[in-house]
Image (cartoon, rainbow, N blue to C red; front, side, top):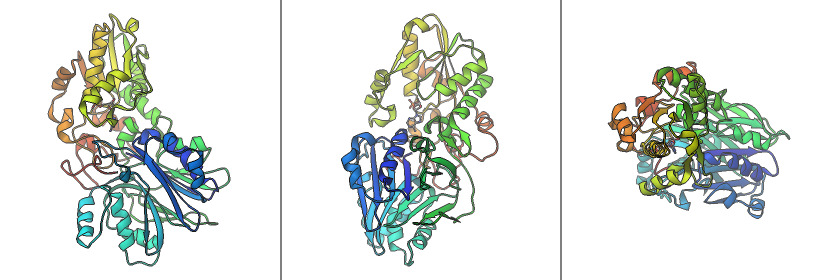
Length: 456
Ligand code: AMP
């Protein structure tokens, strides 16, 4: 998960990076950081907490320079040390470097063990540190060549923003698994960000997506240089459309909200139900529920109210707190629901916790029937490319049939979108990364290899 941003060629670069990170807060709430380069040195501030907690005017002023890179970190399972915040900064032979990474490297242990064998010391559990070490140890004279050298040694999913004292480098892996877009600010400076919603806030114009396999180099007074480092083999992550990205973001030319509507419409075709009302699980299921209601020709109502002062359910490390948080977060409008047969639509079902609680809540509110609809296929495999979908044993659909899951969550019926239906909704113009649904680990790793829970 996580968000990255890079701003190049404008005096208040750190402030713009701050706004961009704020717009992308949904991609990570554990910690945040910005480093800036003023031509002579790199300044860095990173801390646990939300963007608005960590940065205030005084702090931002310390981040001088016309280039800034930043990161929001998403973390689970208690690995939330401030040491794991990014960007990762280091001094090395060629000077100073700072790295922000979104994704998950599938060969991190092999690379780390080899580096440790040769005497390297690590401060964190993050795979991003491998990247810094590989750059520092390369024998090439120029940083750009050292980065290319490093890229031949890492595998998996990555969007990288790397900063020296005078330059900025941006790389997207050959599969383009995580999104990364290039924009231009009003004064002609450049911005790259995980999601285009960051551009809207700083009034940057979207130029294009960074291509899978591409490296961009930003130098003062010059246009960005584009080099294709790898033959592209695009596999954009379907889960970005299903759940993770903000609905107003545009990924690879597709507005996320529209994709969710289509998934909902397709879900109505595949798993209709006899219902009076369609309700979304707020906020994650809203667009898909609207699509489902349109497809069914049944009224759509915001029948569950969300308390916005509670964070996303997955952020809490223990199961007990997570259950409690669902209840703290969501509350039904009883008048609307009493005596009705309702469909309740969510974007995905992972452990089944949310669905179980919501079905119970709707029944307690007097619903005569509750039909759970999930606008994604059954999640049977853990993602190894940067979405934290827990281990296989925690994935309820990995071990249970649809009927068994239905019985567990207590719904009158349960329906998932088919993999084919998902592909149709997204458009059959791309080979999407569907690893959570089909277990095709095309970029390395497997269901037993370490995921992103312990890593960036
Ligand atoms: P669960 O309660 O474990 O079945 O998780 C499903 C809920 O978590 C849905 O409401 C999703 O919107 C949300 N969700 C799905 N994937 C993730 C993820 N990787 N991180 C956080 N929340 C997620």
